[in-house]
Length: 282
Image (cartoon, rainbow, N blue to C red; front, side, top):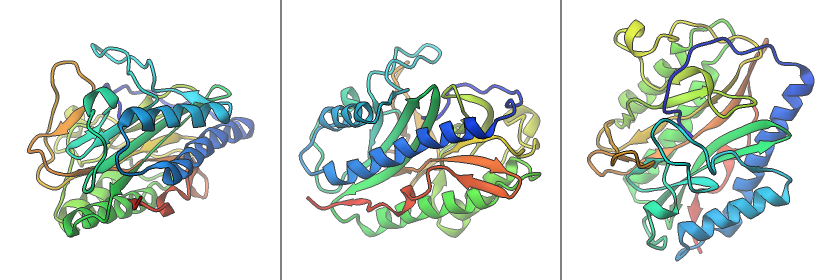
């Protein structure tokens, strides 16, 4: 889940025992996505998919950290997972798209887990039926952007190196658009914590992204999440409703991973998610 506010403060030190708890929460997210791969089929509603997510988390002794989540003027988030279809890039839910999933639909599944007081938060994009050429390129672009961005998260590097890496790949190499105004975040015992991790390089860091020139420090837990669209990086929102849509109605994707910064480099706590099948054939 992308944060709706930006806060700035250093993350507290993390112990080996806490790292293990964070890793367990992240593993719950991956396991749930693995279960989803075998569950998704054409004709399902988002309500059915969300119910499956809730039941799967409960079977692992975990619960959603999204359901009931409050931010700003928003009402409590009404679902176990963020389920965002087509032009809805993030924060979709069963009430925002009630039609059954059909051939050609693209579903972003963002799962947030709370287990033993620690958070896991990661997203993956699924196509119902073989995607068209543009959508396939969009999905592959998103996965590769995430991989390149994680590589840039080296201890001592500035946070802006993440944005520089993914924005160049998405907009220069692939010709798509990074979604503006959204990004990743710190996490741990809370879903959203400092620092904000922008997906685009700021023109004026002091006003657009104050943390841009802060550095990656060992012990940081960061949920990083490229959000990409075909036609524009602009988004629209209807009042204080949760879903965020691509302004021109074009297709979008969302990928997210949980990263621990170590002395030796970034450790992907949700590793393996990027290798899951992403086409629903049933």
